[in-house]
Length: 152
Image 1 (tube, rainbow, N blue to C red):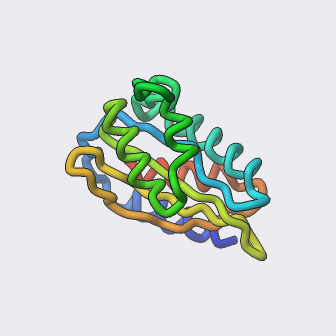
Image 2 (cartoon, helix red, strand yellow):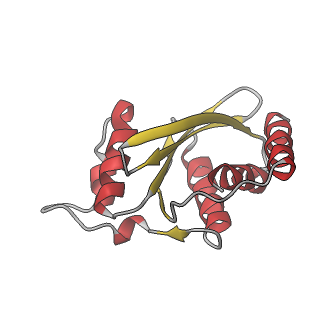
């Protein structure tokens, strides 16, 4: 319910005002952090979001990011402390290099799963905004479309 209301608001406002697309065109969506018990939901939503974004953006896969001396980008992110994940994702995005990095964390709630998603511009090293979304079961596509609309 939360997600569908939010999606309606985002999609409705997107239709009401046609804005020029942002000039950023390369994007990295890092694997989403998962609170205990949400690993499969985090992986599933990440995959759905990539499918929605792929036709609209020049996506860079994590495996394409140049490795560090002794480890790859995935290892770097997996070793990153939870409270510094956005900063670690920014470092990976700058190594890629991409214009945008999208990071997320999935946590369980009583009535839904919550996704906290942040949008980082690598130029200027700035987290532009962060938003929390409730993902009702079976509504991954609608929430992914709303996230994609925020990027457009």
